[in-house]
Length: 109
Length: 314
Image 1 (cartoon, chains in turn orange, blue):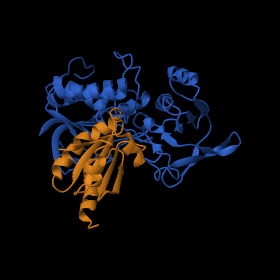
Image 2 (tube, each protein chain N blue to C red):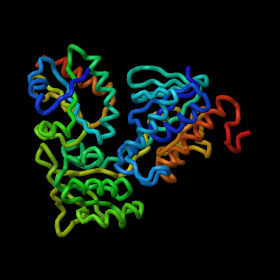
Image 3 (cartoon, rainbow over the protein chains, first blue to last red):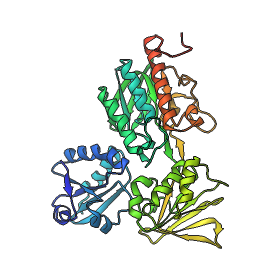
Image 4 (tube, each protein chain N blue to C red):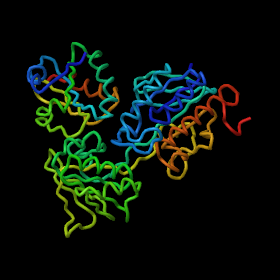
């Protein structure tokens, strides 16, 4: 089950997360965002205990979106210990996203 | 084993599915962008029955209708198709197999790239292929739309609700969008059109786009300072799935179909933007018609029966 993130909750839920966390920046007007939404849900299930997954609506989390220079959606950012370690721009298939998650989970940094 | 697998979840594939359901064909739909290319359009004003509707909503309504008829729409990419002993096997990206006796492929087009320096480097950092998705990030900024057709001009109109200045840059001598879109663009003072010009390079400061280089000077300079580049140069047919099956293409790479949406491969039908039929007029309405025809032809192929109202197949 993915977390619903806000500007207010971002620091606690993402930057201070014990697990690496994938954040999906999305908006209601964005069709490709809607297309990958089921994939994000599946990934949250598949990686339970290894990777947290959160969604940030850029309309409601506009300060956070601006802070991370989000200029295109969907954008997925993977955070580890408060830092962005992977940026995935645009709607990609589940397998490609998984490959990039595995890279991060596999590294010891 | 299915009667039919439909690859592509845009208007052609989804309409094919609606007809397949009514023909009681066991089938499923597999695609990566539910609603298809039209889901990226902010406003559709020429689809009969809907005076104005967003492309996203129009696509979503089609998906909803397909699902309401009991058909699964699987969100995944097709990897490879094999054709052996009159059975088609589709292998998807997650290594699943789907077998069927007939196949309708309606995978549409992939966005054409500019293939210029800076395009990939600044993707998501000022370069975008989706005005509907990303216009909101360019409030009070200066942007450019590259292209001259409906998608480019309607995209520019959408952008003008957010940006302070929108350039349309097109390589041709005149924009070729519907006159209705051209009229709306002319009325919008934020939009400025630059014709007979291409982009040579997209430049930035490392973290975002700052300007572009033109191949023809504009107001004495070949540099244009701006914050966003939206690429709307149409699509190239995505035919890599079908080439290994020996499917015939025309000289521009579009899948060759006859008026029944048959390809040269028995049991393989194609519909939509990436076919020779779709090439004539690339619109949702024509894609839907081709999808319906493909389903009727698949029904005839599978059941040896004349589908309701289909002519010429005795």
